[in-house]
Length: 200
Image 1 (cartoon, rainbow, N blue to C red):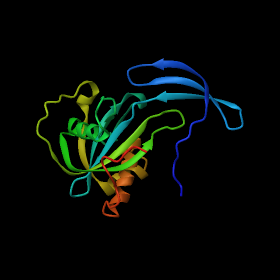
Image 2: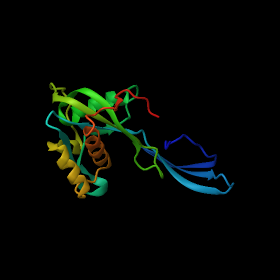
Image 3: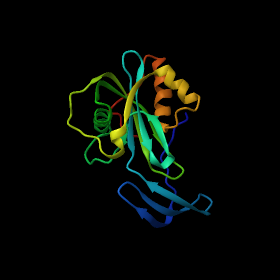
Image 4: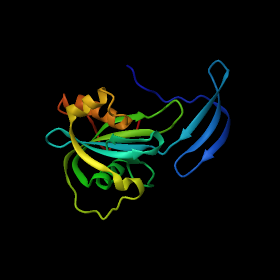
């Protein structure tokens, strides 16, 4: 069976390089199994959630958002950081869906878990599948800064897959979510883990 497994090689020295509100960066000296050493830069990140919200017509709720680091307006799926103490991943996803789009969902499942850049970052992303989507009541939340300019739109799932495969979508969670959602839809969404599934 092919399955990822926990493993930890010894760290013989560690040097902090940077710390801010979101991430910490350190340089680790790691002892390899042959007793050689490797320098590894590690970015510690709180993790994130993303939501593939589908309506009854198999359309994906997508948002367009400015991303300064890449200098682009990206089409994405709703997402947010896991940076609120005491909030489960599901609660974070439910809050982010409402804040970014004004929608709620009555059915939730875990679609995917993955590390965004395991070569250097601890960031782990859980993508939820949200169905039974409907407009939520006014939650009194006001977007700030660049989030004020978020645009939301419904895109047929099959069309979103074509956008991903043609290189017109560049956001990792959106691409992963759309492709996984399309694959799951071919099996009537059977076999998906519950929304409260444990991180493994």
